[in-house]
Image (cartoon, rainbow, N blue to C red):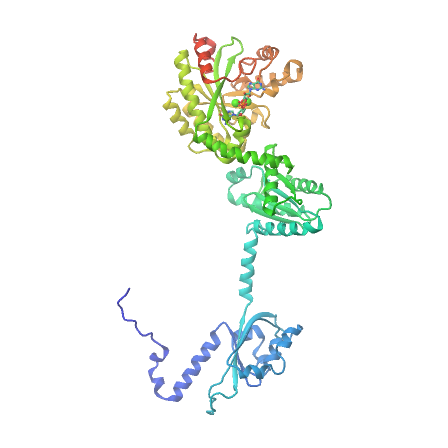
Length: 605
Ligand code: C2E
Ligand code: CA
Ligand code: CA
């Protein structure tokens, strides 16, 4: 609080003390002052006489109603509604209107539409204040007003601001498409209508594939332009009655109301995918994107708009899982699956908290001498109710939910601890292979964390091989290259897992510092009876040799396969024929039994 006495505010009058000297000059001064206010205010002001004839008008009134020459001496009513064709406005101001108004202290009407002659019509709030005071001739107070001030507040800008706000609340500012709330509203409305009409709306949920890497590589402004262009292409592949919304990020929703036939939804989705096929051109740089689309057709069982969108989203996820750039339609099986996933996510969190994950080890052998050279760590989860859950099921779930970092750290820690015990039992270093998923590799602290775990367990970095799939490298090649360089620096080796089923060529993979190719078991299965399959494997071995990569064949199940692989030049093999994944105690026994260091054992590392 301040102790200062409030100072009286200086007024114009104080500065012009002599003006007060005579009543006449003072009156003149007051009139000038009022005139200045009259001219300056951004509200239209008119002074009218008792018959409604305009005596004066300020500049804002001129702006709204027309030139002064047209305003002065004109009757107020004809001025305001000269262009009106709407009867409601006229009926408001019948003949008795003015006399009624003049009897009042204040007359007001809000948001009335005015139609001044030759000027654009507009909505305004109008106030009329009759003068009831003494006129210049000293008439007594309380008689009928001799004149009135008409105050007109133009609502145009207020309305514009209002509709701007309304627009922003229902649209995506970047693309100008509808937003989630608008499309949800429309869908909800369509669901209600469909209850009676029976024509159910269909929702397409679209997510651009690998948009994140475009954003990371080319920058956010290019990412934004891509979203805008993609939005236009999606719009153009639809009928004008369909609603396209952007939910945020690279997710779009299309609402098709009343399609003639259910299968048309697939055609619409296919048209969208086709529209996105053409490369996007950003100042000479061609960018390719595809999209994954999930479709959900609402029916009488649809709970509400949110549920329909969620189901389309689930179908979209399925499209991603099945290889992207494709269309999947929601069905009852997906619904059951969803419940299972929700249950499983909760259970997986608990499993991490309660240390329920274990690790088994599958040996990798030298094909010539049959010597043990390494173990691949494979995570296991045996849940009391869900039973044994396959890593092919819960690893992707862990990736999606972010639980993978917990899973990965757990596996790495257990595996390094076990590997240290084999080394002590076998008196030589047995290699350890650990699977690493994309999100793990993406973590900025991944390499430093790894180095810490290795130190903690006194593991030589050279004895550890991380297995990555091609898609992990391709999702974000720049980042992957940085991580792989860092891994090479600390001495950890890198293998490409499931090699051959991805889309990349060896020429592309050369960009990355890699050490090992693990050829996917689908190339191994049945090669004994497939000369073309043998040629493919031969080509892979030759290329790998040229690049100095070690090759491992996985999924060897038949003795003939092993023989062939050996002939083709595979140095290492893994598979049920040789040994299935085994618990740590068994792995320890196997390691101890292999304790005679064979020259081959050192080959891989
Ligand atoms: P993967 O890395 O390709 O692992 C090989 C899978 O093939 C293992 O299944 C293994 O049990 C199985 N297998 C081994 N030999 C044969 C054979 O001769 N024939 C056939 N048909 N299969 C064979 P598993 O343990 O169910 O693991 C499945 C996948 O889960 C792994 O594929 C890997 O991608 C992932 N995974 C497993 N453990 C981890 C982990 O700790 N972290 C991460 N990120 N992923 C893991
Ligand atoms: Ca693997
Ligand atoms: Ca594999």
